[in-house]
Length: 253
Ligand SMILES: Nc1ncnc2c1ncn2[C@@H]1O[C@H](COP(=O)(O)OP(=O)(O)OP(=O)(O)O)[C@@H](O)[C@H]1O
Ligand SMILES: [Mg+2]
Image (cartoon, rainbow, N blue to C red):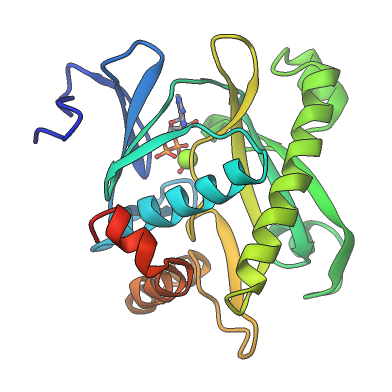
């Protein structure tokens, strides 16, 4: 496959193959090409399926969200969505922390702590997990992150500040299209000058999204619950509500 960018997505350029995306070296040393694949996993990769069109849908949703965040002053990895599935991005030295922001209590947080199901968090709850499959992504605190030398106290404060800003922008964005942003996970990395930049992806794979009227799930939770046949319709619903005609024209959709 030869892209518009003329970067061959072959094993020679492959830097990292994750569970849902493949990261290739870009033409420029400071750039990567991220291929959003259709693979979907749950339970630390224990269950894996290919979900038709998932990579396409997620890459476009992610580009739309990153563009909106940029316009609101949040620095993201996005350089350009070359074509659906293929994002040209700044190459980052990733910080192995999953920053989770929760607006409503659900999922693992109510299994681990006595929060009432669906209770709102006001202010939003910020959780940081150590991104390491071998250790099953355990929850961090500042002292552990600093002792692991994965982030400084200053970095951790920056991550929290940026996560809240991302939450504000995204909560508004989804509210406008009748969707509740329940919670989400983001990852950050440092660029060559040491600036902390939002990386990886934001998509229905990494967010919990509920229809504001019906509270129907529109995210990966459907897959975790084994409702595989509902996943793509839900992702498409988010895509259709989020994308304007102008966006579609721009990305040739
Ligand atoms: N801009 C970037 N520069 C360099 N690496 C990146 C960038 N954005 C994301 N990454 C890394 O690329 C990988 C993307 O892979 P992917 O998300 O498919 O799998 P994973 O993170 O290993 O597993 P999972 O997300 O399922 O826990 C991740 O390791 C992520 O941290
Ligand atoms: Mg990932």
